[in-house]
Image (cartoon, rainbow, N blue to C red; front, side, top):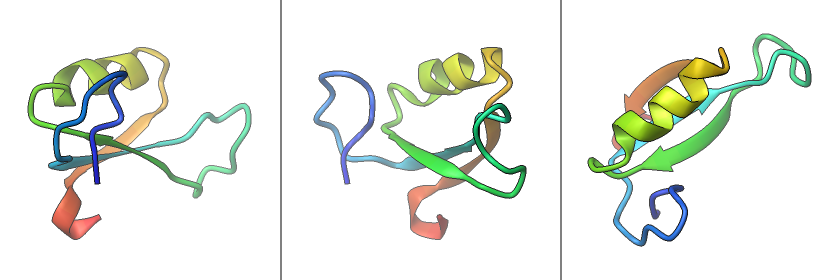
Length: 61
């Protein structure tokens, strides 16, 4: 499993669980994967839009 950041080929360490409330039911979760380097930037991107719901280690997601 690789990081979802554009052009990144690093192994994912984190699962960013999100949904777009305009498109998805409240219980639906989509997943972006993040390496250590991109965890913060991807979380901030989703968070700024109100989409980020949870961040979990990949092993538990």
